[in-house]
Image 1 (tube, chains in turn purple, orange):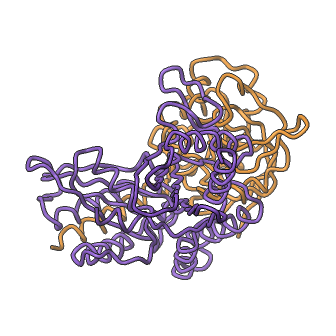
Image 2 (spheres, rainbow over the protein chains, first blue to last red):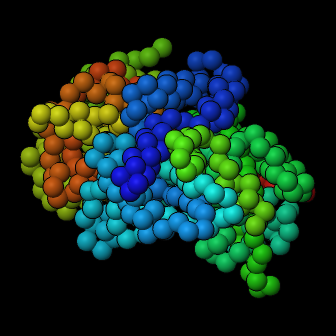
Image 3 (cartoon, each protein chain N blue to C red):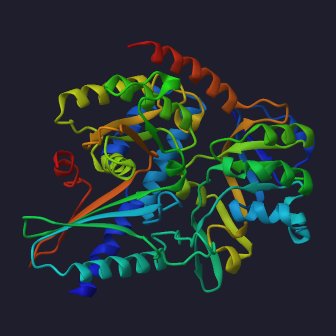
Length: 303
Length: 194
């Protein structure tokens, strides 16, 4: 079972790394139509779309920065979690050997690359037991360029006159997207986390990147803010790659957590256009079922 | 109209390029990123001079495979260039670089060095790593692979038709400065609304 799990996870990594989710590709095709023919913005999206097809055909990493590998694994009672972790770690090594992943784990003190993507807190794996009988794994690959432009604000934020309410959230999110310019490989997918402590706030923000671009936030206020921020961010004229243009973001997704009375954090997890996610459900006695629809996002929103 | 640039290239040819122009590169480029730039500034790397004089640096940490002793790039898009800002002007000056290829643009020091020495910044398409790898026809050599690891090593690549956009030219003009300015105005307008 260990070897079998390992090969299921290797396949999950291959899919995440080389197969851009359908909703993101559809959003890019829509964005392409909005950009002026012959502009650098339109050419950039054309090249991105050609790249998406090439990567899918050849199982090559669609971006060479295969990013932080962020796993969420849910399992039924009675599952051996240590064995699951071991299968993920071994799958990571194997996937690196097969060039589905670039060797991307660097020792922060010695600057030595571990060569196999395994190291301290690498890969990042969150385990959670659930009521269902299946094992489910969701994987997100997020590159370093987009990580570098992610940002956290503490409200009230005086320079923007941003207070502790959704008006304040709107202001700092717009400013965060502006600060990123094209550096995080625009058009970006923006995950926002409101509340929590500094760490949890970023976690909530990052988890939003598991959501489908065309899903609907069950919270009506947040749904309205997501829509408004999506439209307003695209008026910033930063455009694909920061070349100027109409497409600065492909989506804005907002989640929240309870906060301390003293703290009001707004975290922005900037996702590049190539947010890579993939999922697998493993049923006892049946083969693995792969998909790009993150079942994870919904329950996480509500917890 | 897409312009074709063959490497090595002269300062005069580079001075003809304008921001917003699409360029296809033909010839030999060498990758260098964070560890590479620090190394190039702190050391007198004579060995790299033939690659850099009249040549171009590519900010890239590729995914490479080695089959029967031969390297091949399978995924090789640009990495964010601004991290090299503390080093780039010195590297351009010291080694006679004519072009820097990357993504996200660079700052005032690099722009000034481009103007002084006849160099341009070329923006590749971030994330289009497999499409770019398909234009890398040969890996001629690699340096510092054991010391720096695969992403940070110096890879000598021959490219044919590598598509980029000039975003910083040799006359002190930066598309990034223009877009930043214009978007700042748009941001102010949005922030003024309730």
